Image (cartoon, rainbow, N blue to C red; front, side):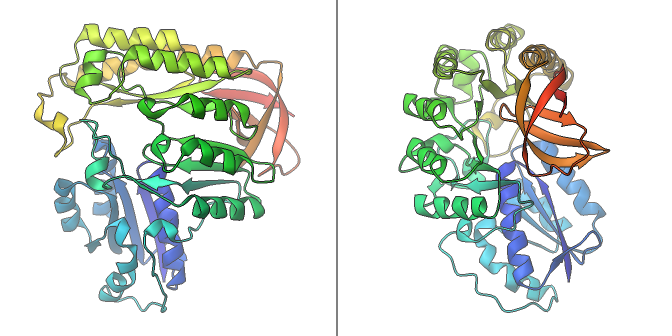
Length: 408
């Protein structure tokens, strides 16, 4: 029996897919490009992901299951396109679903309190996701996560440390701690960072995603003082206008956000790469309010930005607002922010030209090795030796907005 999993969503969805893979293989399935079973793991946060998932579902000829963070409205459409839907929290029901679809599966015991207790099938040995929590209590007015994943649930610290130790022992060089809002991890996110950092071995530690309202001075100091935590943070701003932030139910101001950036940069003795998430065309966003976001982007000088055009999500508070910014205007605003980010990213990357930089080699494509620096820049270089999964020192020869070129 052969399977494939297609993921349309965030890193948390990708992490969930790894746990689904492990369950399937314990039932006797093997990964294949010519599957008998396809599972689509989708997140309803963005309409684009839903649209791609629906398109793929229509093309799928074999048995099809769908899971993920799915809104009720989207569930109705996916039910028509698939053989069955299942909630990721109900992964223990997957064997029974497969039996009903005619698959002869091995016996397995999937007893657990929460599906995150299950061991995942990691995509590679080099970099791994370790979810520390799931769900969200923030109820941002545009976001479906509290409705699709429920309230925040933190994994036990001991369980997280065990998983991280296991990965590092197997040779993993990069650990990503995942959560919809890692800063609100209980009992203490900064203490968890310190514990993972103190695990023996050579590895990098990263995390995502952070909500500015919960980013504490203690976390900032831990980030700056722990050698394995990389000098990179994704800190979503979502808008550079206070009125729009209030309408989004983001309980911080632009001034508070700028202060956090100031504290972050002051804490680090080396350069700090900061990326962000932003939504353009939120209901009621005027050109003047958008110009405020442009101004903030120029001031902060992000090294990267995930720019989304607002799309209404049924069930959210923002869905009740008039979606009065045209698609064309949203597209233009996205382009304008992208141009600013490309300029500031290029400025950040240029400081490394003719300097040596450490990088972790992740893959090889078209005779080039591709890796990431500790600042989360993509770096590309040629080498005769097989350097996959290794930390290397490379001399930067060229910078562009999206990464670096180097030589060994």
